[in-house]
Amino acid sequence: MQLEEIASSISNIATWSHVQKIRFFAWYLHSYRKQDRFNPADIRACYEKLYLDKPSNVSPYLKQLRDRKSKEVIQDRRGYYLVRQIREKFDQEYGQRSITLQVDQLLVELPDKVPDLAEQVFLKEAIVCFRYGAFRAAIVMTWNLAFDHLCSYVMTSHLTTFNTQLKIANKNPKPRITAIAKRDDFNDLKESEVIEICKSAKIISGNLHKILREKLNRRNMAAHPSSEVILQFQAEDFITDLINNVVIKLV
Image 1: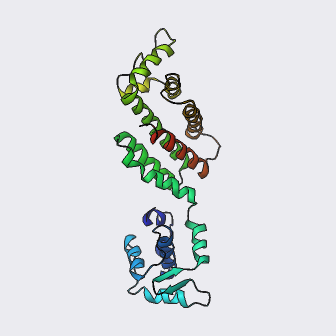
Image 2: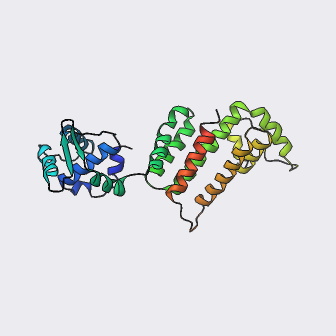
Image 3: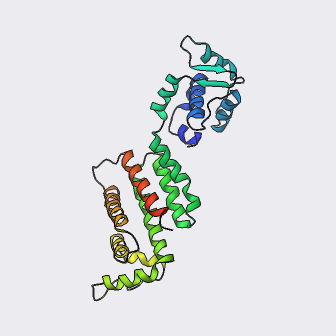
């Protein structure tokens, strides 16, 4: 996650003292840039990244943190690092659980595996929703991504098989659609119908069918007004399941 994204969730960061900002920047460098040491130039770069007024000299503030009775920063020949207590404090306030970082990384690395432009739009919106805690919206957008990917998979690899099964599944004497010819034709079918036809035609496995049915129900609960609270771990489970089992696997 980028520094700007974390800082955007902190409404008053511009009013913090330089000592507060330097602590925060040091924590970011440790936790997100994976630097075990930092130097004054690294801290100045963080100020510049956020377009914040920086001190003319960062070193006196680092010395202040280093020389306190209860040290907050330790210096060695390789540079500076925050003490464990300060890092843990920032982890609790602004950090993310390891699974959250994994989900974020999974989404960030996905564009290379998703060449379809429509899917990339869904992906970008899912990333924004997830990062800003809009978990209902993240679930909806991830479903859109996965379902669109499923339809594209059928179009490119299993269209004849799907259309054969569609004819078998049509029980209405005047069906809404008798065959899929283009991507937009899937809009004439319910999402649940597409999933069932894919299963009957053996385009997807029984296990994937169960996953899609379960996630469609979850999407419906998230998309419609209700008092149910969607928690972060629910969104994480939803996203990882669909990305790994649909978007990445169906190629």
